[in-house]
Image 1 (cartoon, one colour):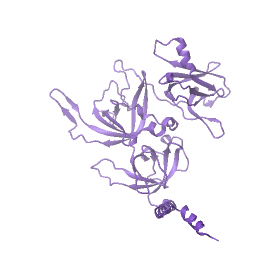
Image 2 (tube, one colour):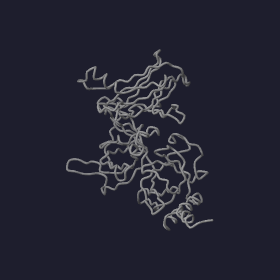
Image 3 (spheres, rainbow, N blue to C red):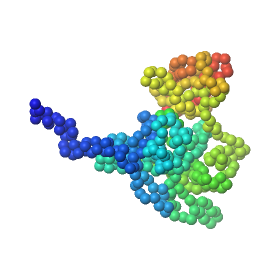
Image 4 (cartoon, rainbow, N blue to C red):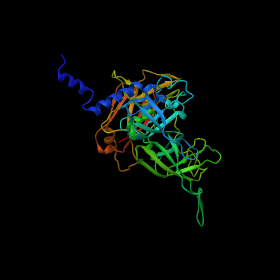
Length: 410
């Protein structure tokens, strides 16, 4: 027998009032009919917690494109209660794909996969908080931004896919003074704030830390290899909205003495002698080479698995454990059962530090050798370590294998 209280409990399961009941029913209807919409797409999106994964989405037009204005944004809507942060990368299939989605496999790095071409790469740049069904504004990424990052005299090429946006300076493109004439053309760049979105996990997804873009940085923004257009960063905004970095760049002169057109990067050469002053990015695992892989991670079975390879400038955090794995390869074959020795050494330009000070700081970095090839690193909770840099090195006892990477404590 159904009592009044049983019936009331049944009604409360669907909502405490008519508004909640209708909202829950709308969510059910949206989920049931989601794949039947003409704008339905199976997209490949980068989640801060799960990494690259497939997601159901609806792709729709927000504004009509015109050649008289900047590239317009589109809408991307996910299933009810599915959300992603602003600045997230997403690959969206286009009209030439045979299916509504990509092939059903999940590459760890789709930027290097032939099926995930960058002309299908978009970026979430805004959130339309509708009454019930949230939609995201997306724009297409159209440029691989490359620049030099310098840390204590050592330079490295970084790169990040971004969107070039028009910024009208309302001038003729040059500025004339009494004694000089200079370029006065400006444009905009939008790129994700990768560390804000992913934290230290950004290295897992082969993303660079976009915090390393600084004011006055120079970029090549041009397909013209004869007379390339160079721009200098004059303004950086990363709080409106959070997760997205908006830059204003002003055109400047190309300097053939220091800029490298073939690599599309500025300040590549030394101005005085023309020598290369940066370290080229290379694959970390090659034939006949020893590599330290970071970050390695613990799987569900408690086993250490290989992660993404990073060359140097690894960030380790005070009080947190980071895992590293040494990979030995000869003639394309991984070598096992090699006895190794691991070391941690302080990098310091401070002449006031004594040998005892150096040993003390090195002793604050706890190394736990899990086996010959794997170690964990844990900086102790000491403010003395903040900003300090160390070299983590590994070598075989026979001396025929060796590798090292740079660590910075934060």
